[in-house]
Length: 214
Image (cartoon, rainbow, N blue to C red; front, top):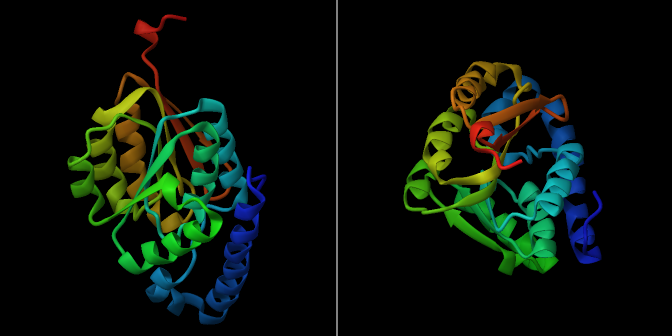
């Protein structure tokens, strides 16, 4: 990752170290580790992170919505790019202890003032938001992809971008993400592409070709 701030790079190293440790523990636990998945860092990975970071720098969104703060891995990536372009991040998460961890890391990196952390049920939190959202990262429990999409889609700005993670892996979630992908393709003003990076990232842009000024 090429962060814009060396301080962010230094703090992000704690995520790299935790990822290695968590992966080792998951291998030791085997299938039994699935029941403890909330304890593990399940990051988007640096390849996907680099794509998201570059997209924010290139698109220069004003408001970034992250659904699924978790422990703040992707939040820090988005926040570093957001600060560089004068944007702000709204990040939503159900587990308060995960957001507490994320908040501490953001403070260490000097990014706390860029991110508005919201704790609670994502669809309910979205109902209270007016938008518009210029960039959305969807990386939450997969059964929530469709209800979250239905909640934020009306508030997605023109030429707004959606990045949805885990479109290919894990395999057991494919039926859930398929419902999301079908809903996206049913919208005439959304253009979308699936990239085989990381666990599979789908990039979608709101663009109505019929009303395009290009």
